Length: 379
Image (cartoon, rainbow, N blue to C red; front, side, top):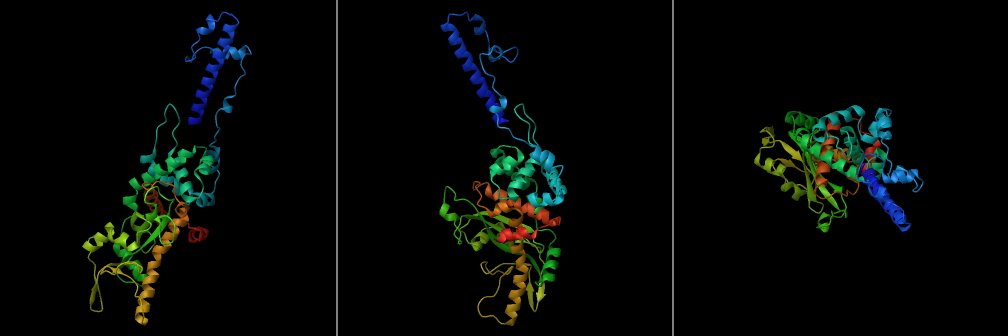
């Protein structure tokens, strides 16, 4: 619509200039031009001077569509919404149509817009579809814009509006600890007693920032932002911390997180100890060797290992794999996290957090995760 409005202005200016040229020629030939002087081009009623001149054959008519870039929403309105089957929805939006519509209902309070005199507002469904398509694919903004018949800048706006809505409305309801006893029982069935989570960090690639670029280079040599997550036995995020620079070590991120303070103060988990041998064991979380050994954080033994320590390491590693699998599913489902994000440093954490929320909701609904997605994530 903005392009069309701009085109109208160009035509208006073109018409005004043509009229002025005509008036100048008439003056040169000494003709009476009083009638033409009285024409007001700003009026919207009655025949315009340029219309009269076109009728007289003095000015060639201009096709309106020459000035306006035509965009079409038929692909979204008539093909995707009406024709696509469930497999097509799953491949492109990472969820079936029914789940997509549920998301639209949840986000509607924050995304619903009113039409203006200048343009019709995007529907909630189209905003969510644009955002999910961009998050689920490595497509460029221009490619997504062409798909949905919108401007390139509209895609960027839709992504951030939807991400902000997800964080505002759903984060505190979805990324939560939940029933601790169920989690403990789940890890116990996997081989580790009185455990209520596995923790790890992962790097989300970004483009080089304008400031402190060297601080964003991680140990693998690329620019990134750190996502720290605590995961339950089913691979759902129960606590996330995102925004640290890629150069920062996982242990430093952890020690400076709210989760560390709550665990240290004993207020994150309920007081639920069990006796192992003659030692009282509190609820613990599991980490890799990068994390500090704490009364409430277990990590693998290192160095020379006897059979008991090897068994301990095996069980801990088996349970801790849930967090690595969760990261694989997160990035496999929302492939934008695999590419170098060109968002600002303030917007990237919002998008990452939104993807974590979407991950939890899809996992809790048991939505299909295709094997090929994880292969892409691992690559």
